[in-house]
Amino acid sequence: MKGNYSILQQNFGKHLRFLREERSLSLRELSSRCELDSSKISKIENGKTNLQLSTIFELAKGLEIEAKKLLDFKM
Amino acid sequence: MKGNYSILQQNFGKHLRFLREERSLSLRELSSRCELDSSKISKIENGKTNLQLSTIFELAKGLEIEAKKLLDFKM
DNA sequence: TATTTTGTGGTCTTTTAAGTCTACAATTAA
DNA sequence: TTAATTGTAGACTTAAAAGACCACAAAATA
Figure 1 (cartoon, rainbow over the protein chains, first blue to last red):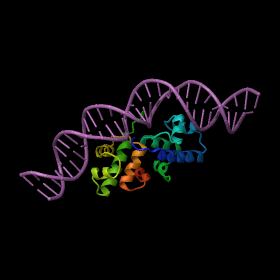
Figure 2 (cartoon, rainbow over the protein chains, first blue to last red):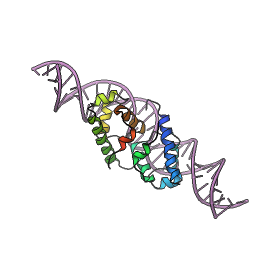
Figure 3 (tube, chains in turn yellow, blue, purple, red):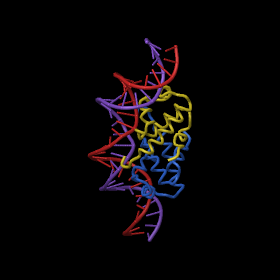
Figure 4 (cartoon, protein in one colour):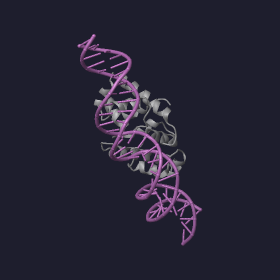
């Protein structure tokens, strides 16, 4: 992408990590509940990925929450 | 992506179109309010794109809504 | 102590979103 | 009837996400 969205990615990542730890899931546990590699989830949580819509929904599936909750963070 | 997310993309697209038309914005008008090409927005609305997190936030900016509202649709 | 678990970083290939433009038919407005 | 607007589709390049691995240090557990 043209713009720099690293702050956005970092905020998303922090929020994801919060939601995962809130459920006491390890990266590999969350990974096994959706179609995502654990190392990829790690990268997302560390703000290194501008993930796609489908990936957001996979994460929501794994966390058993509505996808919109994953965007429920302050910028 | 491995899985087929066309239904997801289509539902997102329909919802986006609803939100845009609700505000009486043309594709080019919305386009001018964010850093997105109008033909790209057209493709998103027609379910042809698995858009990225940054693009969701650009659309939210253009529509002047919270990004999570863009994921507030039924699957 | 020995052993699993955990998070992370790297590699490599394939796929595709992003970005930028052009063109055009169908509406809509002047 | 012109002229402008609107939605859409296509071409093309570049950057990067996805996907599937492997390896390892540190931390937790047995």
